[in-house]
Length: 190
View 1: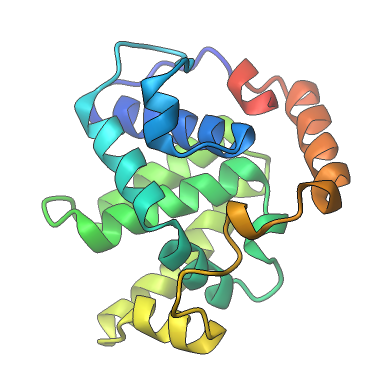
View 2: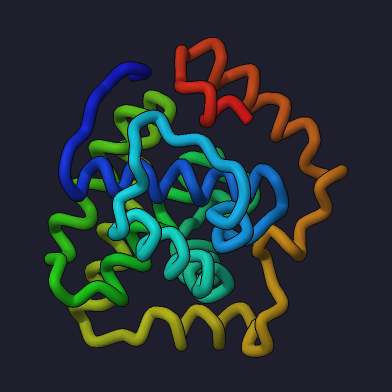
């Protein structure tokens, strides 16, 4: 839904998504992206957007481990880039931002998935975040469990630095073509 306007923290989350997406697409950290050129649908950059994006980027390995062990059928790197980054942001907010209720984080992620993702994105992110929330509510330390399950205690893993870009070229091209065909904003076409 290109042209959809957001306000307040929803706008900040949208900006954080855009920053995460651009950092991943260019092989940079969010901090490097913020220090250089970046594009936002709406600006100026909200400080909460920078907080979410840099926080999620700093925990990328841990967030990807949780997402990866929770997703039954999709590896993190095979997920559409918008979905993957929305999940990272929502999970970071759920785990690290005490002043935001978990239900709000999930609802906001679902709304952004409707705006920027595919037709299936909102159901996918809602279901995956719901499974994670149930494990958290049951008292599970989802990060420790995921890291133990994946055996990635040292920071190596399934994140962007560990990916083989040539191996995912077909997936990346399909995402670009799909984004253009669905009328997604320019930043989601990268």
